[in-house]
Amino acid sequence: MKANLKLRAIHGHGRSCIWLSVLVFQYCFQLSASLIYWTAYVEVEYSDRVSNETESSRCECGVFGIHSPLELVSGQIVLPNWDPLACSGNTTFTAKDEPWIALIKKGTCTYAQKIRAAQQEGASAVIIYNQDGTGNATVLMNNTGAEGIVAIMIGNILGTEMANRVKNGSDVTVSISAANAYGLWYSSSWAYALAFTFIGITSMTMVYVAFLLIKRIRRNRQLLAQQREMKRENEKAIAKLPVRTLRTGDPEVESEEVSCVVCTDSFKLNERVTVLPCRHLYHKKCIEPWLLEHPTCPMCKFHILKGKIEEESNEPPSSSSSSPPPSGGNFCLAVIRIDQRNTSNSQTTDTAFGRPSDHDYHEPAIQTEHIYENPAFEKPEMMEHQDNKSRD
Image (cartoon, rainbow, N blue to C red; front, side, top):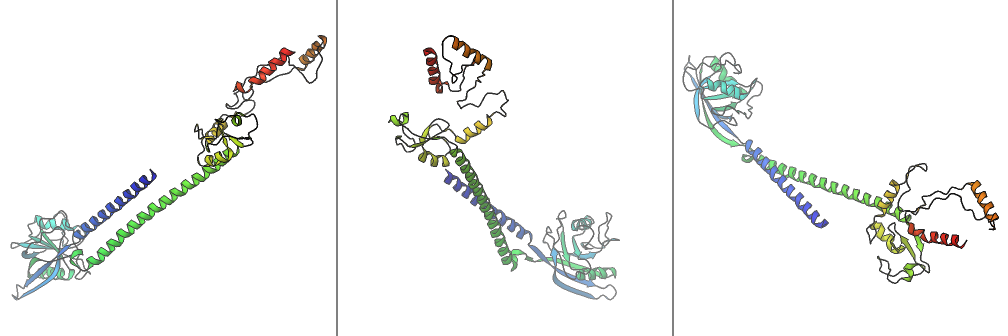
């Protein structure tokens, strides 16, 4: 039974480890999928209205938002009126031609709030450029809540240049198209990520197994401590059990049918036997090893420690208490009170009637009846006493 329970526990722990590994792999896969991002080709054309000169540049310097459509869009750059961050509730844009693309600077409010402000004004796309001092660095935008419009981020250098050209009166036209996908599975970093994932799962599994091992060791130690304590209690209880030597005339010696249940051998003369509280007796050398492991009577399953506890709980708190003595013992419940005056009178009376006075014999004037828990033990003595009185 214990082996089956251990096997079930091992199988349960194994299934737990498998499910834990599956969940970790699933989380890592979802995380890696969320880290995949697309870059954007940004083709810019500057037209000076005064000199009619045109400049153009093309670079893979944009990053699409997480929820942005990967579509090809183009249009003239338009800056927000009054607030370059487009965070105020009344942000407006002034566009001369359609389609147009809003150019907004990062900061203060969320990406989604900026994108929705431009989308409400009719923009076909939104370009957000990074803050000052960041150079050409870009970040992956979380544009949750503004998924229906193309939104990319570019570096501060390119965004600042386009904004200055627009402020100086030049026409800036931008074309946006999808470039390449990058992320955990599209770069050489996936091997490192996979290695770290494997190391993490292995470490978590080892920690979990170590926790189970430590828990089992502590449980075994507690069980061993309980067994040692129980053995000490058994030894104390065994030491208090009455031991007697079989003599001639004992019914156990004369009867061949009575035998020790532990070794199944008959009782013999001069053998030492142990008597349990339940009145069953066994060979001392046979019953003591048994009681160390099983502190119960082999015949009636009486627990020797339980008997000890009941005896202690039934013990009266003081001699002046009126409660009866504990059960199980052959104690006399009567008290004989002898009146010295009545005793002397009885001696005088006996002398007068011709009966010799015996100082060794005192018959009390008032004597209560002896009451025993087990009257069978005292019945022969009572009968002998009655016979003596009849002979007198």
